[in-house]
Length: 319
Image 1 (spheres, rainbow, N blue to C red):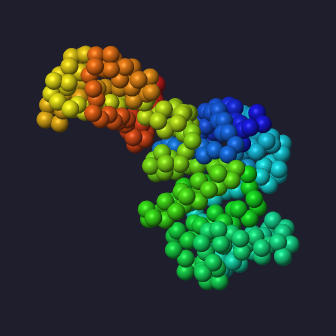
Image 2: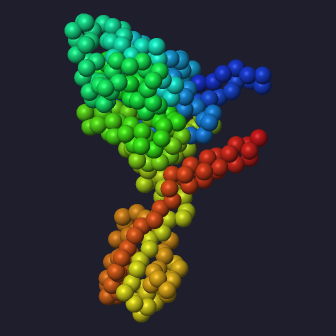
Image 3: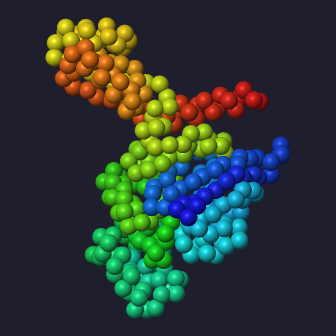
């Protein structure tokens, strides 16, 4: 599909071990639309880094058909490399060089002319708020500054697809949010982001689509809200003006927890639009006015722990 930055079908990878081959990726499918943020989540050892290494041409897959940036991964690896950028949790910045020198080095590697290289470096230093630090050694940079420089270096080649592998590990909350804003601006300009992260809030804030990988298998996919509705614990909380309305609502709904002190009714629900609409229509038909309403769903931490826990149980059961 031409509108996909990544299209992978049946992606497989295994390594030889003492007790036979250890399967790292067990035939996964990935479809990442252009100009979006796709986040791959999973516990340590799930296969996230292996996936990134394969898709970025650093490792060969054992099986599957893959297109990255419109190019066949197996037959057009050089074209793939020319279309992508990779920024990992371990910065590629040369700390003996200044920020400007790091960018100029990348410009040389991309075969830009000296004039174009200087122009590109100046543009990126401005864009990433590094002008004042441009001629200081990168060894003096804070963690947040080093990450911004690392991403700026990736952008020298104008990649259409960027792999961000644990990009904010170790950053303070302010630096992390600064990086989030940069990522959003990149996507707004048409760049596709493939994000792996251990910070579930990061995926919740940024990702258009999330896939959960465990034991080499994709066990869930969807938007953050769709994933949150996969597990129990969601509810709609209704607040009423008086106890009479609260009691009437409780009788009508026939379930939930009523709190006379706060005049609230907590109704179990997946929080979906249809469920909310159906509940409000039922209350309106009985002239039961609602003063306030809020929808509560489990967060991604709950999703992660529940679904990976279920997968572990399945693994144990098959042994």
